[in-house]
Structure formats: structure tokens, C-alpha cells
Image 1: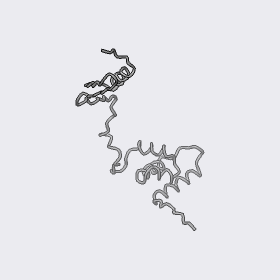
Image 2: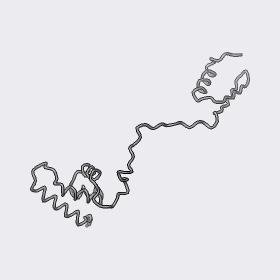
Image 3: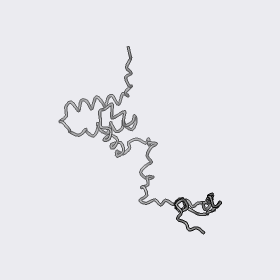
Image 4: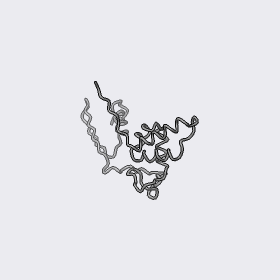
Length: 146
């Protein structure tokens, strides 16, 4: 036999749920939730979380979240998540990204050995693309022989 754990619902949440159920049983289809019930739901969401409140009161999560974000605060308790309106800063319209300058120019040493001998080429400040082009030219014999 397994015991199902029933979640503990705060008293005020249960009272709000009962009020909403009474209103739902007497309302016209698709009529908006009365302001006092909606304000109570927003206050409960601030205290107990949006998801838990939306689930317990059978409310749309997205609409409840919007209600919490747009409703003015009635208590002096401030959320840790959002700063007061006086300290909110609009996001920048433009952000300049500056690539760091290389500390030193990259160095590369290429050593080749073939039937005619050895060759060492030391390059400084060469990019990867330039090195690839040089390697192809050397391997395909496109470079003039001296």
C-alpha cells in the first residue's frame, strides 16, 4: 500500500481557492476574474511562488506572472529578484565589443626536408590562413625554384 503525500496548502491559499471556485460556479463563461480575487492571487504568488499559486488556484501561469510583474507592491517587503523602479536601467541599445590585441605577433617555424636538402622558414606575424596557403603552394610545387 502506498501513501500519497498531499501537499500542504497554506490557509490563505485554500481560502482563495474556495472563493475562486464559488465565483467560477456562478460566473458567465469567460468573464474576467474580479479584481479583489485577482489581487489576492497576485499577493499569494508573491509569497508562495507563481507556479504553486497558479497550480493551487487553477490559474494561467503566464497571466499570473504578468500580474505579479505589473501589479504595484502593497507591502514594504521587496523581492530579491528585481530592483526598485528607481534603480532599473534600460538595456543599452548598442554594445561595442573590442577584440584583445595579441601580446606578441605569432611565430611559426616550418622545416622541410626533401631529396634536394633541408629548408627552414621562420615566420613572424603570419596568420593561419597565410600558413595554409604557403603549405599548399610548397606541396604543389607552385613556388619558383631558385
